[in-house]
Length: 287
Image 1: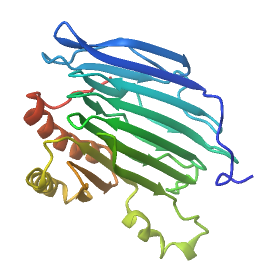
Image 2 (image 1 turned 180 degrees about the vertical axis):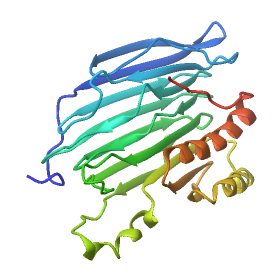
Image 3 (image 1 turned 90 degrees about the horizontal axis):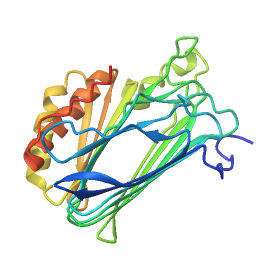
Image 4 (image 1 turned 45 degrees about the vertical axis):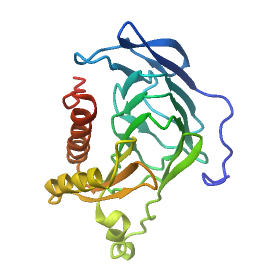
């Protein structure tokens, strides 16, 4: 059975559920559950705001073939949650199957979620699927970022993972706002004959960054301002921004560097945090 036709796993290797509400002037966990190879560290408050920060941990260290992880986040009225990961998410070799993460996010009235995981690293012969279903109130705010990088290959050849599928389905006020479907399938290298066609894949770049923002305050003027900021990174990235059919936008950026993509995403989110929430840029240093 090939990785493209393999059946999905039915039993989760790790489960995580986290519900955030507002109590005593700040955001706190009202319900928390974990099982298997997923959990969160104790909450942190990184500044004087009421936003709570949780760090997701996978004690197993990596996703393997046939692994399934399920994550459920709910942010209630007026609550604010920042989520990150303890380290990069590593996808190792997945022979004849794939690793999968399913995520459900629910955002209530005036709720806000920032999801800023460390990079996703796909190693040789890795096949990975990530599906997120997001239900949000029309007044809620969502900021999702992702950086994808190829893992090291023993022969030094890049793009040796099989494929990555990342899909976000966003419903706002009960109506479908967007389906953000990203499929990366590197060409199979057979030597010199493929070298001429190789640069056409991801325009010759090795890393990809994404930023998805949905917020009632997003409009054409803000998208233009974001576009102007992206010009500062033209030397090291190839980047585009598209406004959704509603109050949101998606940024896609190609680069050869995780650090460059993190800097680009950090620049955009810093502006949003300062303007919308009166907060400074994120400092998620973990070492």
